[in-house]
Every structure is written in structure tokens, then in C-alpha cells.
Length: 328
Ligand code: UDP
Ligand code: MG
Image 1 (tube, helix red, strand yellow):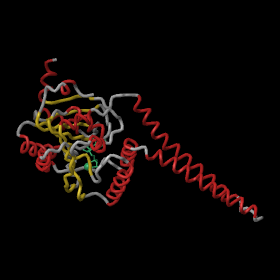
Image 2 (cartoon, protein in one colour; image 1 turned 90 degrees about the vertical axis):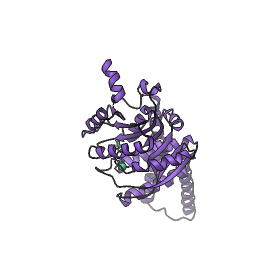
Image 3 (cartoon, protein in one colour; image 1 turned 90 degrees about the horizontal axis):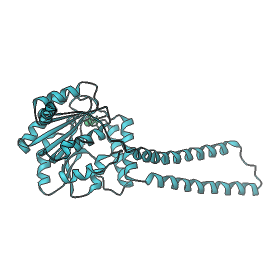
Image 4 (cartoon, helix red, strand yellow; image 1 turned 60 degrees about the vertical axis):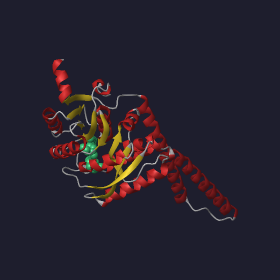
């Protein structure tokens, strides 16, 4: 859980920018320059940039802490290991103290210069202004196609209105963030959780850029995991699908039985083992699939019931907090 110093509300700034960072050493200097410039243009000196090091192995941690030592606007949070993007982001969101909060990726795919536009939109009275990608540069057709299918499928499955083609890039009001922070769940699909809150939300169309440096940390395996998290946290439709599948195969079984009886009455010899073996195999695999879907939900319930903290913080460094720690 977050440091009580932050939660007690002693600190407050107009704007927080929260950035999860995992092996982003090559881009972090540029990130710092561009985000700082945007923040100063929008919020004067009343801002903080919360950089969460998610167990990087490449010196990102030291880079963050050097920045924090130099510039009191930087809050460096070092997590105890790699917890993954959504948890690292959750950590930053719990620590930040801004009245408005911008969520940003470290790779500069979402341009920090759009902050002005997002702020202007929020001034119109919105609680959440979420970036909606019009075009994505530098991402292969496979990623685009799978992302597109995923969002459309998800939107059909869940009751919550999760906008298509959104990432976590968004500006939130403090009251929206407080609601988000109050959600204790472990499997976090943050863009969906923000949609779930409701309040006044609006899309902000923009063009997604190429990564500034490095490569994506979302290979297919992690994309699938995120998709499964999203589906299971927002919908029990897969469970319903399991029972529908059961019914469909029940009907198929009855038809097959009818056909067999009919052939027997007509005196024709039944064709041999091949069809029988096929049916047994298909039924077996369907049963395992259904068990797997059950297991997915059961496993998540098990993990949730442990009530472990979402993450462990190794160290926090910011101008103010560092001073207090020196005294102790
Ligand atoms: N990230 C993280 N922990 C991880 C993987 C990624 O904090 O285990 C951060 C990463 O540094 C970046 C953001 O999450 O700031 C999004 O990751 P990435 O750019 O690799 O994803 P993509 O944009 O390709 O979906
Ligand atoms: Mg990226």
C-alpha cells in the first residue's frame, strides 16, 4: 500500500503525471524533458512526475533516482520486483497527489504535448478524458488486428462501455482517481476499471506514435494474458459460453443417436470406429475446455481471497521525502 505520508494528503499539487517504467533506460531522459516542458506549460511549478520503476534490469532505477535527486518535481518509486504494467501503474496512482492525474507510458508513444488539449477538455467539466488512437505508427499489422478484434469482442461481452482503441493514456480528476484507487482487485485492467466508474468521460482522438526507444514489453503472450484478465474481470460471459457449448453438443449427441437408431432400423451396418473415436475426442476436448474456463475463474477467486498487497515498495525518493528520511 502507498506510503501514509502521501495518503494523509499533506502534499498536493495541481498535476501529477504517472509513468510506469520497465527497462526504459534509453528513453527516460527524453521522457523527462518532454513531460517537464508540458507540465510547466500547463501547471506552472505545481506538478509532480511519478516514475515507477517496475523491477527494471537495465539501470532505469538509477536513472530515475538521479532525476529525483536533481529535480524535486520527480517522485521515484522503486518496486521490489517486476510486477507488470498494470500493477506498476496502480502503485504510481496510489502515491500521486495531484488534483488532476495524467497516465503516460514511458516510451513516448502517447505524446506528452497533448496535455494542453486534455486539460482544456477537462475544463469543460469532464472527469476522465481518455486518448483514443486514430492511427498507430510503427506497430505491425498483427498487433493492430489482434488489438482491434480484442476490443470489439470485449465490448460485446461486457456491460461496461469500454471504448475501443484506448490505452491507459488519459487525464483523470482526483475524484475519479479516488474511486479507482478504492478498487482492491488484483487482476487489474485499468482502462476498463476507469470506464466502470462512470462519471463524465469523453474521448480525445490522437495519433499514436512510434516507440522512442527500445522494444515493446507486450509480446503476444502478455497481450493474451491482459485480454484474459480483461474478460474475466468484467464478464462472466465465458461461463455462460461454457453452458451454451454443453447444450449445443447435447443436441448434436441426440441427433447422432437418432441417426444411429434410424440406420439400425433400416438394417444398414454402422460405419466403424473412426466416427466414434472422433466423437469421443471432441467431447473430451469440450469438457476440458469448459473445465479450463471454470478453472480460470476459480483460480482468480483463490488468488483474490489471499488478500496480499498488490505490490511491495522498495524505496521512494522525492525532494521532500528524502529530507524527512535524512532526519530519521
Ligand atoms: N511496463 C511496466 N512493466 C512491465 C511491462 C511494461 O511498467 O512489466 C511499462 C513500460 O515501461 C511502458 C508501459 O508499461 O511504460 C507500456 O509498455 P509497452 O510500451 O512495452 O507496451 P505497448 O505500448 O507496446 O503496448
Ligand atoms: Mg508502448
